[in-house]
Structures are given as C-alpha cells and as structure tokens.
Amino acid sequence: MAHKTAPDAGRRSERSRRATLEAALELVGEVGYPKLTIEAIAARAGVGKQTIYRWWPSKAAVLLDAFAALGEQAAAEAGESEIPDTGDLEADLKLVVRATVDELTSPRYDVPARALAAEGVVNPELGAEFVSRLLEPSLQLYVRRLRAAQEAGQAAPHLDPRVALELLVGPITHRWLLRTLPLSHAYADTLVETALHGIAPR
Amino acid sequence: MAHKTAPDAGRRSERSRRATLEAALELVGEVGYPKLTIEAIAARAGVGKQTIYRWWPSKAAVLLDAFAALGEQAAAEAGESEIPDTGDLEADLKLVVRATVDELTSPRYDVPARALAAEGVVNPELGAEFVSRLLEPSLQLYVRRLRAAQEAGQAAPHLDPRVALELLVGPITHRWLLRTLPLSHAYADTLVETALHGIAPR
Image (cartoon, rainbow over all chains, first blue to last red; front, side, top):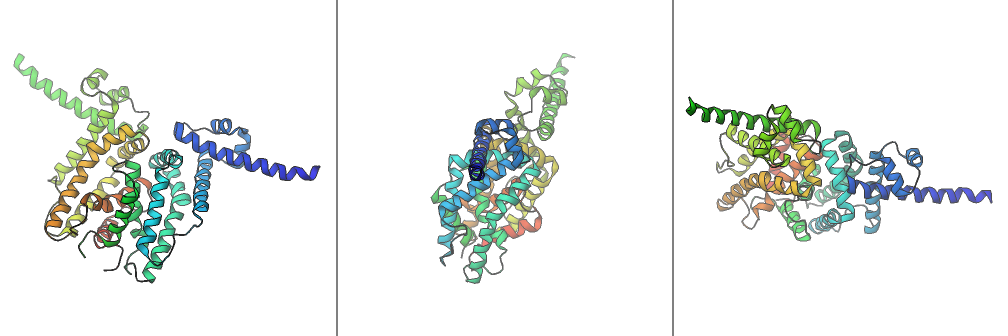
C-alpha cells in the first residue's frame, strides 16, 4: 500500500494549500492586514502553522498567492486570459471594463482586496509586490489589445498604450477605492466611450 | 487690563488650534490612522487633551480639519481657488494637473494623505467624510471649468463633466496610491493630451 501514500499526500497538500489561501482571504477582510497572523490563518484553515511556513515565508506571500489564485479562477471561469479582439475596440473594452466592475463589486473580492490595497498605500514593499505580481500583468493585457488596435487603425498611432490604459483603469480604481460614485455597467460603457473619443469635440 | 484678556485668549486659541492640526498631520504620517490618538496629538501640540475635545469630537474630525487647512493654504499660496480660464482648456488643465502632481509628491502632503486614504479604503464612514468634505469640492472646480469649456466649444457638448474629470483625476490617483509609475509634469501633460483627444484616432 506504500505506493498510494504519495498521491494521498499530494491531495492532502493541495487541500491544505487551498484551505490556507481561502482562510487568508477571509481573515484579511475581517481583521485587516496589520492584524492578520499566520497563526490565525492556520487555525481557520485547519492546518498546522509549520505547514504554512513550509510553503510561504510570510503572511504577505500567502495573501499574494491567494489573490493570484482568485485571479486565475476568474480567468478560468471567463474561459480566456487575453482581452478579446473582435476587431471592435469599443465593444471589447466595454466587455472587459464591465467584467472589472463586476469583480470589484463582488463581496468575495471587494473586502479582502480593499484590505490589501489599504496596506499597499502605506507599505511600499507590499504595494510594489502587489503591483508587479498582480496588477501589472493584468494591465499588460490592455497594452496588447491597444497595440493590436493601433495596428488595425482603431487607436491613435502615437499613443503610449501604457498611458492610454490608465484612462480606463484609473477612473474605475478611483471610484472603487474612494467610493465617490457608483460602479455600474452603465458607467463602464460611458467611461469607455469618453476615453475613446476624448473630452475635446471631434 | 481686563479688556486685554479676550484678544490674548483668542491668539492663544488660534495658536493651539494650529498646533493641534499640525500635530495631527505629523502623527498620522508617523503612526498611521488606527494608532493615532487625541492624547498623542495633545502631547505633540503642547495643548491639553480637554482643549482638543472642546473643539473636535474625534480624531477623524481633527484630521479632516487639518487637511482642509492644508488645502486652503495651498489655494491661498496659488492665489486663486478656481481652475483658471484663459480660453485654452488644454493649457489650463495642464496647469492644474501639474499642480496636483506637485502636491501629491510633496512629503508634507504625501505621508499624512496616504495614511488618511488607506483608512478611508477600509473605513466607509471616514472615506465618505473625506470625499464629501475634501475631495468633492475640488472635483467641482473641474466640473465648472469643463462646463465653461463646453459653452466655449472646447469640450464635447454631450459629455457629463463629472465623468470627464475622472479621466484626469483617476489616472493621477491610480499612480499616486498604487505607485505604479512616476508622477511627473511630463506625465501630467501627456495625460491631459490623451484625455482631451481620446484613444481613438481623430
């Protein structure tokens, strides 16, 4: 029966890993980043503290993996990782900005993501890890879609796509973090139209 | 000599008020909002705790007044409170967005404002007070300037100015809070040009 040990252990490990990430997301939303501890994550996940330390060096590392897993899950559910290219830039951007609104307003994401974002605002090391590991890869999806649009003549040729994408994610993040005005699909559509066509008259 | 008491007391009060606001800004940057206390503000300001409680009901109230005073001081130094209207929308917006970049990157504002912003992200009551009392009035300056631009034919007539201004303040806030890329005058100019002329080719 010894040969069965490895697969069982693998399944147990995977269960522990998922339980740990899930517990980290729940707890950071409940107590905030400063009060989050590996002990509390271990207790909530029903795993040993040493198990967590074997895989992750810090609570920041657990939490960043938890958000990465959440993002991968969302991408898997959406069935794709790139922004679609139907040839219609406006329609494609509305689709992705609406999906971002849905993600930001879902309690499963909103509560833990706010706790992480708040800490990143005052903790430059954590903020930089969040940006390089989680945010920047998703922004590069916009860069690629906008480059394709430039090649197709649907985006102004001289624009820096990295600056252009901030016209979309900047206002969405502003409304989300500061809760100034509602985040809705109607707003997502208006934002895409305003960013594409600009403030000046055509 | 009794008639001299009132003016002296008034000067003392004003000195205590300023010292309290200054101490609140310094301390929130040093210890963060959750650990900020009225006791520590009183000690740093060299005023009695009861003096602070006589004027402000809470540490949040002290801090919001401190930021309001900082904003009024900046407006007084700039010599005006409205966004200038020279008839050239692009030039006027570049001026104000550059000034915003300067403010956000000055240590005197950046450190305490980050501490307050971080707390507002996870504390909806404080966030709402920050938005209604400090942020929204400054956004209304953009609304008025953009309405004037619409009347002058320099902004698209159908735009909602409240949405349009987010193309400017959203990306700036995104770079500032998340520290994704540098905030510079060159970026301010590029942002204004991109927001005015849009992503789509003209």
